[in-house]
Image (cartoon, rainbow, N blue to C red; front, side):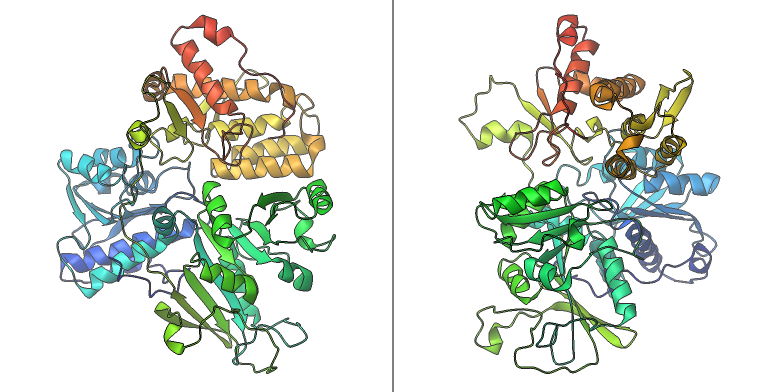
Length: 603
């Protein structure tokens, strides 16, 4: 499928088709209907871009075959840890699901170990399912399709039996909406987009370095939206020195991407907008040993500094991959852009071309020296598209084709076969982190509502363990603002959103945090986990099935609850689960043992 690369004005898909207007289409062939509604499912899935990382974007459309294919229900996955798109669409359609067809841009992944998406489709009485593309991860690929077919449903994967231009366009939509996931799975780095604005004569600034503003206000608004769809925005040290950017999303939505600065020497100003981390964190990547005193200054401001032996774009992207980043927007100058392109980490380019001419022999260009001496060496964009934005033209295209493949992901059980030096008598290690992992439901971010008593001993339902955990930071504080924070957390649309809200309030208003939080937070998490694993029998069984194995929360950047990138983390979440497992197994001697010394680590 490598020839299906793009063509739509990504990062946005075409304008949504309303349920009412979609029913007016009078296509004569089933494949035309299938293609139409698969594209609609992809458009719905695109609404969650920037919120689901590092997980897929899912959309679902339910249509009845008679009456011209009327849409009776549709939805999308808002964020990982929220109600699956298929479940929401089935609830919207109600009884009209019976005999209807469900259209999915991607095969569902068994993210919560209870096959909730598949179960909802089966129980609703849907008779046929059309899938845009199979799941790209090997241990999930084909599972949902097999489960649906085993229940007697007709399942068709678009393009596997018939090929035509309409079908190819629909599959293209499915590939594009999850392009970051596909690139991440295939290349082991986040999906990287290089964005720049230049004049008609190819300059990104005047000879003096002045660059405000090359593109129009409409183009800049589009850039804010691009940022809102990314997990991180990268600039170089020169951009920080000359432009002092904020790299915020402004009008681009609620999602705030991390700001990342790449600087070998740390020749950076002591005061900069990026050092204000009250709203969104900043990471500075540098070469090992660079300006230790300045590193301490940045750390005192709350900026995270990460050192590399050699500051190479590919190593940085590998690090961001380990941290779970899905999509990165590069807004750097020509020197860093050239280095990133030469490293092979740039997958797509967005170039805003303004109808201006500034000239200047020494005026900088968007891409520095690449070592090419003949035009035949020039890199050609694939599947280029053009869009007019105000007076500017946005030229977009791929440097590398969107992959459609089955990545090889070795399981924990295969480790001894890969490395014969590992003794089979040693305890096996089970990692869990992302919800697509086989044990992903162990995460405190999984969608498993729990009921916990409030201050008045009345049961309150929380959407996830993380919702409850974050809210407990502010319980018992007399300030009315703390009570409003709890209500805000209770209404958070996803565990990720709850975590963002709780951490932001804790960082910005530490006076609202209960004074005993550091001494009780481990107990708070344990009680919530115990409620979760005693409420859901299949989770209980899955936890007990891991007896004899070491459980490790695989977050590479959470050094308190997770295992850390190189095993340097404290792994308290894994410890709590092993303690709970011992308790459930009746091993009172282990469950009573103090596994968890107190700590003042902030989380």
